[in-house]
Length: 391
Ligand SMILES: [Zn+2]
Ligand SMILES: [Zn+2]
Image 1: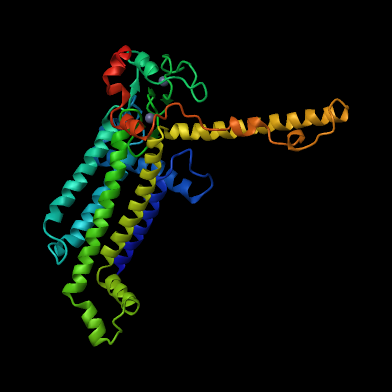
Image 2: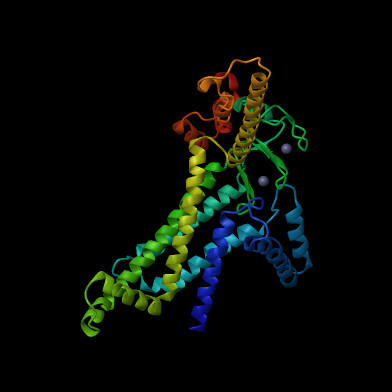
């Protein structure tokens, strides 16, 4: 009971931890909250513990190796995050295999699912490695001119300028990542979990990673539900409850008793189901958000930029409208204007600036189909990128 209780607590903590960190980035975490402590705990204390563990178990060489790896240009600034991901994935799979594989094959689950689950997890790890280790779209002196031709400056979010660190022109939609220390084309965000930037070339892998992990979690939850349904049938629980315990044969009467039995006899599976459903919902939300951005050809970085721009534009428009109204009042007081009549003479009417200019005008949006194609086949991998005039 103690062991099971402990396991329950571990899963509760993991669920909260994963949920919070999955959807959080350093700059988004609200300060003075519990979340920031978890984030700091993972990025500092756990990291130091890992270093300590490595140096004590493998010697100081390993310790310096990790430090060198950490500080190496374009390498692993926060290696703890991929380790946490692999730990959660491997740990969850191990617990599922140990606690539930003995029920396979069952009434509703056949033997194939054992092998399918290994394949599903392996594909997940491959997608993780592809996102993590493939080039996100590094801008360098050799390809900068092609990137500049591929993405035009919209003169709203992007204007012609040079990256002060890389000393090369900054193509539109690119950003210099201070963690990776390089300019990334079509910069989306720096992903701590992947230890790399999500950019022009690896957004497709990142999206596939999110979608696949959502499907894995859903698949795991469904298989566990089917295992439990099989156990209910095999052990004739409904029959025992209705015949021996005299419980009415209706859904509402049986439901609490069945849940009670499942919590007693299969608490690990029940916790796993809740855990997988919570993670799959988080992943679905995260995937949905990014899919919507992809379909409108907007990056996460641009979504924030647009938010800031529109809010600034509205304030400017309001200030202009107020100034315009004030001028109209002054003219009226000075007797320069006739007595205002009708709505067009109202000095407090909304300025045309207010509604017209505070609108998102995304020049990169080329329709859902072409936007999606730009993710699947990045511009830099097309023939027109190498020979811009042939386009
Ligand atoms: Zn740069
Ligand atoms: Zn980065």
